[in-house]
Amino acid sequence: MSVPAPAPNGKFNVAQKGAAGMKLIATGLLVLMAISFFTARAYEPAYPALGWIKAFAEAAMVGGLADWFAVTALFRHPLGLPIPHTAIIPKNKDRIGDTLANFIRTNFLVPRVVARRMHRLDLAGAAGRFLKAPAGQESRIRGGASRLIADLAESLGDERLGGIVKSATARRLKEMQVSPLIGRALAQAINEDRHLPLLEAAIRWLARTLDSNEGMIRDMVRDRVSWVLRLASLDDKLANAIMDGLRKLALDMEADPAHPVRHKAELEMAKLANDLQTNPETMAKVERWKEQLIENQSVGLWLDGLWQQARAAIIKGAKNPDAAMAGELGKVIANAGHTLESDERLKAGINLFARRAIVGLAASYGDNIVKLVSDTIRGWDAKTITDRLEAAVGRDLQYIRINGTLVGGLVGACIHALDVLGL
Image: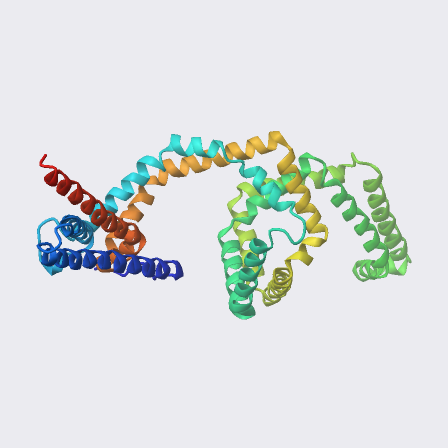
């Protein structure tokens, strides 16, 4: 099934009008030659000099008609007659599309051609110059991109886009196994002794908790000792001994990095890091906790709040990109642009990466690109694409008709001159 070609734009309409104007001139010149021929032939017996005009006009008509036929045969049947080898473009639209696609493939999407072309381009330098451009420059690109981002963020709205973001985030978190990540992070922290501040903070918390809950601990001791100890007033001594022992344990653990209890705690942390990565039971338990946390209503409200703040910041920055770029963010981006432009080693590395990436795309997807071109042209309506091609090159083709008319006339005049001279 054929589909219409892309909708015409302003340039197409201008080209179409220009081609129509030149067609009118070429046709008018042909008509003028016909009038001149018949007029000269009628008055030639009385005025023999009109033989020159007759010869010129006669040959001009032949040349003009021949070129009219050739130009018309490219796009349609002349006078609607199904003459063989006419209406060439509509009949061979698919073959033309294949030929164009192969031309693009062999001349533009060959890896060595792309590499040679990319070798002349300094993408990193261009990106650096763009990033460090002062406020007001590159305003059309920046402004257009900013308006697009702001319009997109506003049109989707809080509820719709926020739901999309939250759903995508929740889905991604559910698919991700967090237990091995936590285990590797904890193991890395232990290997680099970054767990020590956490362990020392836990010891200090234990000491503060003992002090703040001393009364409760003493009551627990009294409730659990026998009445014999209470009768002998030994319950207070026991509670004092327990409190003193716990305080001394906390102080010794904080002061002595090699304390046995502290060492035991570190071994348990290392075991936990290993279990988080290898123990199926521990991993399943962490994943269940993760899912419960994701489903928690408070977490959902927190994610909504984060999204709303981010969306408001995006819209604010997009509506006033110059103001957003004037602060620290603008300085960071400008410095990055300066580095990209001035650091030759970095620039060479980025350009090499870009060149290899684009050459790789050409090698891997060149056939798909040309197939897209070929299939697109195959799907276009023949009449529409013919009209567009005729409008694009019709002005030059009408010049061919005009030139054919004039050159034919000059040839006719030369032949008449040879005839007059008896040669």
